[in-house]
Image (tube, rainbow, N blue to C red; front, side, top):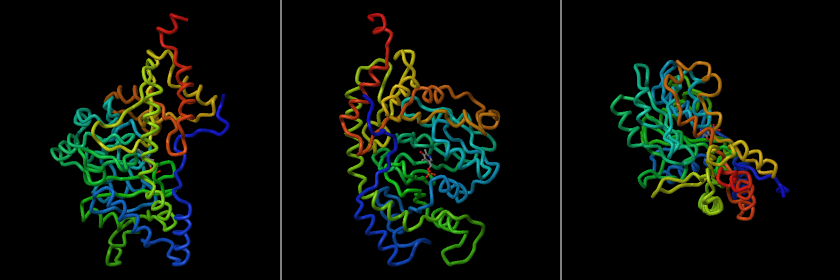
Length: 384
Ligand SMILES: *Cc1c(COP(=O)(O)O)cnc(C)c1O
């Protein structure tokens, strides 16, 4: 029986309505709507707290945040930056849009993240940086990437859009590399409707980022060079603060959901629920299964279709991956000089299923029944 209401991936978490309306009322009372207002500064302070970083600079979204951080770190048009292909296309587009050339590396199959050995093979005369991604909140091999960046004199940044509240070696994601960039888009588990932030321990980089966010105007009010507009408004910060207050409740719900999925799909041939880094804190914002068609007797897309028929809107995160879409696909010499078999394998297998505080155990049971009914492992077919 199909669900009456659609079950979707990335349903927004609104936080406590009364708190939000209270904050919005305050904005209207002050009529300080944007330009580094008190709520934006409070949001930045909360984020710095949460990540243990010296600086958090809120932006209008993560894509522009990546661009500003790249510029502030000294990256220029024509520079090559190594990024994983297995990520949301925004990671690559952010660079491409400002003339920086994304060069795609392969992924580690367990973590889903940039494989440091593959990254090293791609380092060439025009390489100036590495932009790692903590895919689905699983931290990158930060030690290995930091070692490579030091050895080759590269800028090291992380797209941390999935990793708010996650840890690496017990330390919160946020202050690793030269800068880490978070997203607070409506579909992220903590959201400001639209929004992002650059987090860093580097005082000079933080100051530069603040200038670039605001037309190149420096702390003294002087125009110090070209900048863009990437400010977060007070309305957005009101939502961001309210959503951030609910982070523990949301993570707890996600963790509970992950356990239910793991239990109900346990032992199903060809289907695994992707896990998180052992011994680390995770936010479980994405519930991702991998369907190995050869074993399951059904492809990821078969499962997707079966779920859709039940009004469950699962998502192919991430497929197609960056080097499989334009403008990258047409220019392998520039963007992927080496083959990316493990990233392509992951892209063919992954499927994101609904989770979050609005999804309950009965709904998950329904979803898992459909997945089980779709899978036709070879041994079961012999019996039938
Ligand atoms: C959502 C997301 C982004 C983009 O965030 P915006 O705030 O929408 O610009 C970038 N990278 C990854 C991995 C994402 O999931």
